[in-house]
Length: 422
Image 1 (spheres, rainbow, N blue to C red):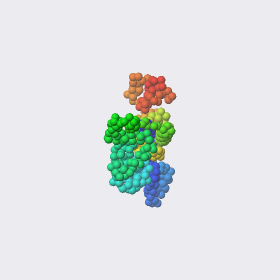
Image 2: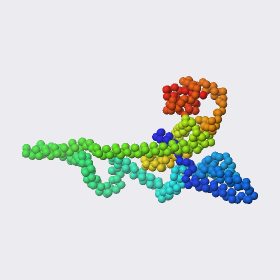
Image 3: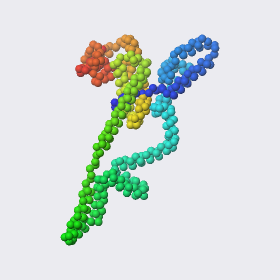
Image 4: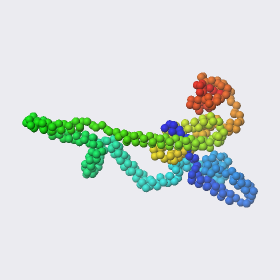
C-alpha cells in the first residue's frame, strides 16, 4: 500500500474540467460581453483596441485557478465588480470540495441524493444498515459453523425450522455421507447409553443359552460399532480439481488487480507531472528543467502525498472498494482528484526547496552566494568528499541519494562514496 499510496497521489484529474468548469468559463465570457456591449461610442478606437487585445490573448477555458493567480486578470475582474474575485475563488473552492467527495462531479452528487431519497433518507438508510448488519452477522455465524446460527433460525421461526431439518438431513447424507454417518452414530450411541442398551445386552449374554449367545454377541458388536464411528471424525476430503480451479481463480484475480493498479498508477504519474508542470510555471519551465531536479521535485511531492493519503482512512477504504470491484475509471478519478487537491499546495514548497527559478531555466547566473554559504560549501561534513563538479548521472546511486542531498549538492556514488560539489 505505501508504494501504491505514493503512486496514487501521483495521479489526479484536472481541478477544472467538466461541465462546471465550462459553465464558469462561459459565465465569465458573458460578463465580458455585456460589459463591452454597454460601452458607448465615445470610447472609440480605444475600446476597439482593448477588445482586440482581449480577443488576441484569451484565458484558457476552465483554468480558473490560473486566472485568479494572474494579478492583471484579478484587477480586470475587480474593475467589473470588486467582489468578483472572491466569488470566483469561493466557486473554485466549492467545486474542488464537490470533486473531492464526488469525483463524477455534479451529476454524481445529484444521483447520490436521488438514491438516498429513494432509500427513505437518513432513517431509511439507518434501518437498511442495521438489517444488513444482522444478515451479515448471521452469514458469518453460518460460515464459521457456530451453533448460534442454528439457534437463531430455530428461534426465528420454529415451524419452518422443523420442516427444514428433515430435508437438511437428506441433503447432508448426499453431500457428505461420511460426516452424516459420523453424526448419526453419535445420536445412536447417546440414545443407547441413555437407555443402557449395551449393559442390558451383556446381562442377556450371561444368562442366555449356548445357542443364543452367538446372536446376542453379534448385536452387542453391532451396537459398539456405532461407538467407534461416533468417536472418529472423518477427514475432510479435498477435491483436486476443485482445489486447482480455486487456486487458478485466485491467481487470475490477483493478476487482474495488479494490472489494474499498475495501469492506474501509470496514468496517475502522468497526471501528477502535468499538474506539477502547470503549477510550477510561475517558478520555472518544467520541460526544460534538468532531469535530476525534475525527478527530485516529483519524488518530493509524491512522498508527501503518499504520507497524507496513507493516513486518510476514507480514501483508503474507497480505493480498496474500487479495486475489489475492478472499477478502473472510478479509481483513476479518485486518485486524480486527490492529486488535483494536494499537488498545487506542495509545488510552491518544492520549488523553494529545490531552487526552481526562471532565471536558472533561462541560463542566467544564480545569485552570488554569501560568504557563510561559500564557507559551508568549502567545508563538507565529515565523511563527504568535495569534488569540482557535479558527477555524471550514471555514476550516482539513485536508491541511496535523497532529494534533500540533491538540494545540498550532495550525492552517493555507485562506488559508495558520498560527494559534494560547489
